[in-house]
Image 1 (spheres, rainbow, N blue to C red):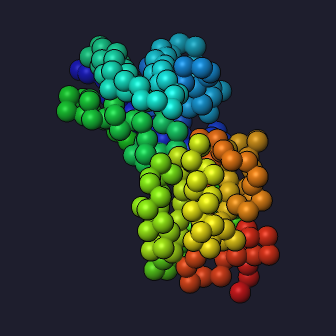
Image 2 (cartoon, rainbow, N blue to C red):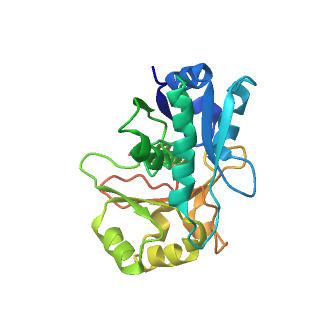
Image 3 (cartoon, rainbow, N blue to C red):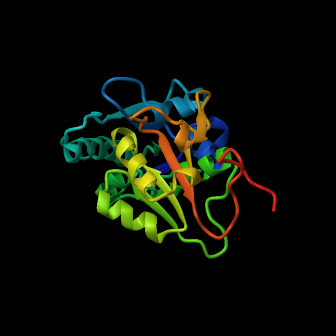
Length: 244
């Protein structure tokens, strides 16, 4: 019998936001794989480090963090091949996924390579969007509001159109696009409705009105939440729930 592959959603970073199911499967899996940069430790692994056992086999999936394109296909091809050898030998493999595996998660690249040959179970995780709304103290959306998730690398025209058509907006993958996105939000007249969040749920978390951010760059793990729908969620600080 072959082993089973698990895609475990870990949430945004706080180990206490792991689901009971993800923790159980993590500790029961003899093999643990996780993405990591080529210039530092794996964030995904750090979330669950206290729960790992020395007897578990670890497979780091090293993904170069570069502005220029890198051969991602070859990275995931090699990782899938290594994971498959363990599955073929009957060992279950847990793949660690920051946030949720199927919400812009890198696990999807392994899923498409292995799903046809092996049994796979996806364990959803707490999305950084939900964690950010909780930290901001403001709902993402309500009633019939349209929530739009905008990857910051989109071009200016596409971003401007989505800013105009949506009631609630979440910007992800901000990083080096921060200044450009911030300017587009300003041109749309939405700065006062925007909250900026950085490394949400971690000890060095930052939560503030977007207009108070002076930097022209943002970490990869940052989000901008905007609300311009029918509900009056905006307080004097630009954050938090206002009683009505």
